[in-house]
Length: 297
Image (cartoon, rainbow, N blue to C red; front, top):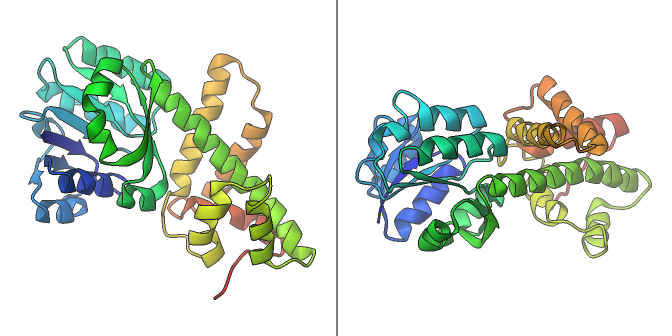
């Protein structure tokens, strides 16, 4: 199938590569052509703008950092909607604002184009391995027609309901992940300072009721190795937490603990760690406790 793919960064690039490996012909675009070098070497075609990636593509994917980027790529002067024709389908793989994606869906529908929000979770390693979770909101018939495409990038593809519901699920998931990271940093520095080895403590928690994927999979790859190369950047984590607290305000939901997590991420940005992996937030707790959470071979 001929596909367009906009945004070949840390997450988009490996997802696009897996679609090529699955036998699809891609036309790709990114702000930096060098971000797509490997995809072009694999046989993808280059588009000089998002709009140019659309003609001839049955489905167009977007994988972009923040909601305003998605808005610009969909509605902008050289955006994908300008190059679209009736019957085309867009999947937005970005973590987006549900309110934003619902508005964009209406704009697309007025042109006969179907937009589905399809955010993903699983990190850059999950994107590379094709094991992402994919959360989809939108027209169920369209979802079922193209689910096989999503199976090429993820092993847990879930239809979440109406447009925007995929984004709601992703925001709630990331809020839990970031909140767990903040609480884990406190629990781990406490245990280590009280005399338990980090490896032992992590093993006990992972095999007890406090276990989580954050502790089992992510911390061992990043924080415990002192590796803060993203990964999933702190700036994006902060954006996702703020999307959650904003959504809480929109629906009148109390978010006391979430607002504390929000402030931890704001502090991390203030420290200049926005481009580091989101595990960098734990460095605040390390500094205050005098305990560094590192495992050494």
